[in-house]
Image (tube, rainbow, N blue to C red; front, side, top):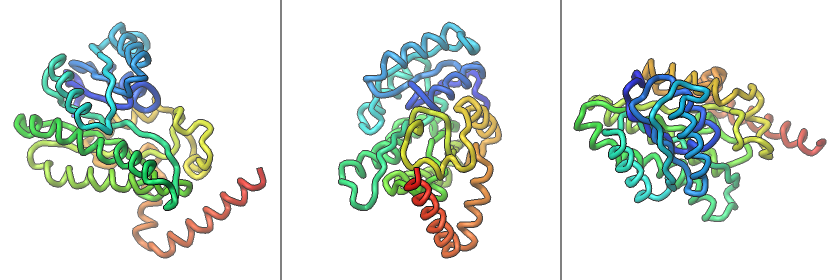
Length: 271
């Protein structure tokens, strides 16, 4: 997938990974960039869209900012309609919005539901909105942001790990069911990225164990992964090894993760 002359929608674009993707994609010469985030982030979106349109710190590209709650299907449908009105058919939908609401099995349903809506149903809503047109044209690209936590786990958070596992399962299903119709699917699974989401977050030591990469470096990896049409885009290459270890010996992996979790807990108590 080459991004030049493509109409690209990016959710969660006001900061972090989404913002970095928008700036990096602009350098590829897209037909248009539609940047979405929560309505209360509108000022940040509009500033980013203006920056990209003016060619500040990147090649100039047409860009607009739109408020959107990705957990609300009507909002996602309206986002796609506005994108098509502005720049024509949507070629690439980057379903990137995410959040951190750590929890255990005891966490209230409201937090479980919030994780599910943002990390899973948002991808479903995006697929519903764009796949009919993509299938009719015989081409299109879905880039869904999940996490290495969806391949391995998240030690501090069941709510995050479970919803990210589901996000990867959905991406797999979409790739299998729609690939013969010309639809490409990639799922982005990073570990720690230097974004506001992890800054100061309690319990992020495990994710940081293999190093924190910048959002701009991650965006470079994404462009390369989309160019190669790779399903799993892994900015932290160690994740492949961890995933293979897990698959080759589940009981051994669980025992090792218990020990690792105990070490992290002990270290946190000493601080």
